[in-house]
Length: 443
Image 1: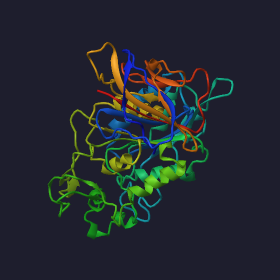
Image 2: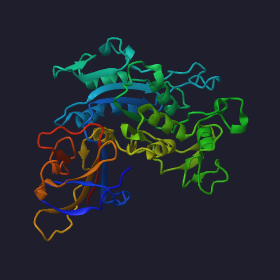
Image 3: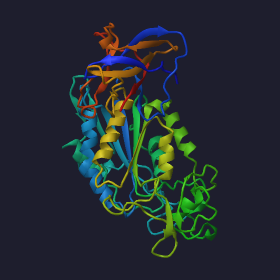
Image 4: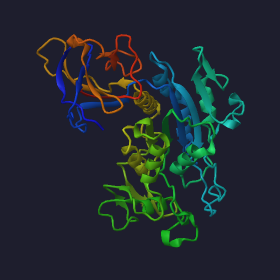
């Protein structure tokens, strides 16, 4: 990744505007992006129109509340995608369940050796889709929307998202994702489209590297319950006995586990599928990964205790493998099920998808670096990088620079009051296959 020039104080009015513009032939430095008060963007120069969105939904018996909330609040995601000058992207929208069975074993009445739902998209049973397995809603050449469903998009999604609550309790979310995107659903993944994967789950992923993890007779792994997934796939600090009751700290996936597939496998798959990490958005709405406590279940077996049972969408176990997966992607969103609904989480997912495709929404207010002066004294840096490594500093429009220059404008696509960072090009088209890398100091 190219480095940005140091943040430069810029004079801007109350409606903040930023841009930079001159060729550079040096390696440019940047502010450490881990700082809490720096907003960082890394987006394509052209807003992309094609986005394939896959929801992977936990179908185990404890998910009824979460399913209802997803259907009720899904419009919040659409609002963020649709509300702006570009309108709704050209979307393929599909849903798969977490049930991939437990082949070659029958682990329970719900966990069968038949492959479960086999990573197949769930839309074919919806009358509104007329037999299609996923939703298609794209802008046609005559500037009208071409759709393959009847009724509203929200209603069509609500039907496809109805994966039921009779799925296997050994949830294999990551396996379901990989299978769904690997050819099981022809036509869903478009070569040139961005990809967004959204997980909704109240238990952690249990995708096995060695299927003996699901063997009912493998007593060396303990009782046949999803605690096996934690004991064999997660390691915590100072934890010689994973079954001992009490809180845990520093818990992360165990990359050396002989039983659970490594997170690297799925990161490599997603990046390989799109050819570029920047073309992938990963989101998870799961149990709080910072709340790890071991206790016993109703059968007096060791168990990972569920957090936020009161006031949230049901009890949920920590999503540790999800957190690790998301940490590997620039465009990611992590929310917990401890809220009473999913609206805020889905709004954030919609915002992340838009941002990944070239819409630069500020998530916090711009910091005023000199409050004694009128207006907002902003600090920001922006570089446009084209193929071949040619870099151009884009100046602020408020500095009096000619186009291309940048400014921040109000746009309902972004959170009210924070604004959207845009580049004004004076009517000239944006260059293809380039990237914008920007940093701004925020409150």
